Length: 113
Image (tube, rainbow, N blue to C red; front, side, top):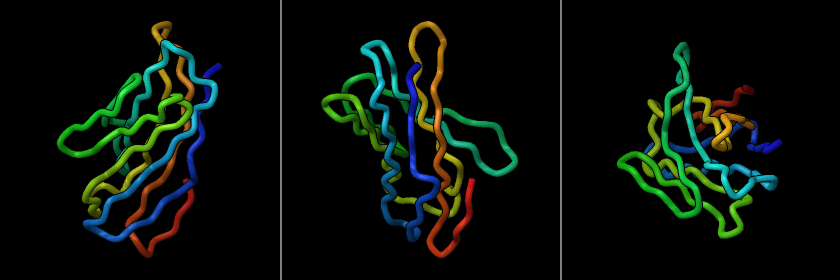
């Protein structure tokens, strides 16, 4: 079973980058690294995914370690609208998932997931 681990929460100031780490030491060669976020009172939404190389889109970057045992989601200019639970999920072609969540909150707030 592929498992992921993430910190319980992260904090930052608005307009500063936020780095959300994810460890997945049991990743297999066929596992893709997916990130989702869940805003308050909403369902999860897709953010980005990758297999072996770094990926960028207009909102975030995903950096993947060379050995693929860890990755980092980077929110380049985090704002209050980005405060959410972020999920790092490993997905293989069989549909099996292993997930963990990190709560990102803007600076000054502390809360568990």
